[in-house]
Image (cartoon, rainbow, N blue to C red; front, side, top):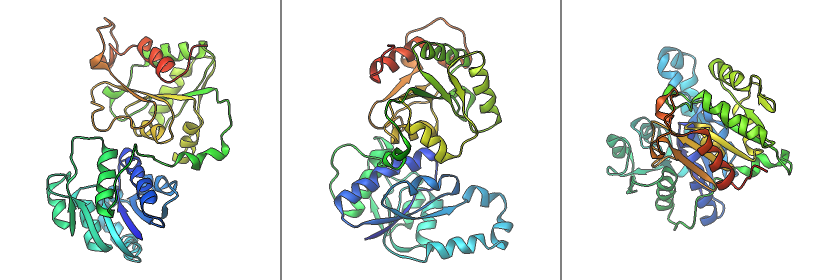
Length: 333
């Protein structure tokens, strides 16, 4: 059986789709997948053993220069790649109008997706040949698992398995001695205060841990360098691509992270992870999996501290460190 998946973005959404493939492989021997995904995240589907071909799209880039997209032949090559295979099913796990149009207009196979009550954009449901109801009030991983189970005809069992950790295990060694602090995200008010990061780093290094700080752009690098300044045992990583930073996460003893895509990657790798939420609600898209602990600033007692962003004032380094050392099964010793 051959299935095409359409799940283009974001990083977290792409990662959240992986357990559905694992379910399908267990239920249907020999099933294989191709996957349409944004070019920035094209590596992620290839890490799952059930994926044969990744078909990159560049919707974000194409929209900025439609003329070049068509005259360069890039759009034509994409359409040819998409229509080159006859699929048994084409599953739109994105649930948006743009993804539904990609499914129905250019792929070859029975199109499936969420029904009108379940889909993210109402008009998208009109493009599917088969529609399935999935309750919106549950984690994104479970929604996608249920969509696949209905489309492919099997019963779900247990918790979802991302099944990508083994892809990165060949280069890992026992006795890992470092933590990864994922300090960067897109919005200013989602950043945990730098003063708090400095206190947490001091606690962790005093307990004997090495701290690794990844970054993705100049602003994030500058923040990492500020956090590392004058601190022994703190490493600002070199510029890494997605596969390389994922390799670092795979070898970590644990992570502390803000609300960011790489936090979902840590979860997919089964790394213990304390995730810090300020203005956003972990709700239906928080950490999914083993040892994923969401801490909400709004749920903490008043600290009386003055920091920026102020929304995080009550989620102090003491709370984060206590959670990390107790609930992620690591002690200060």
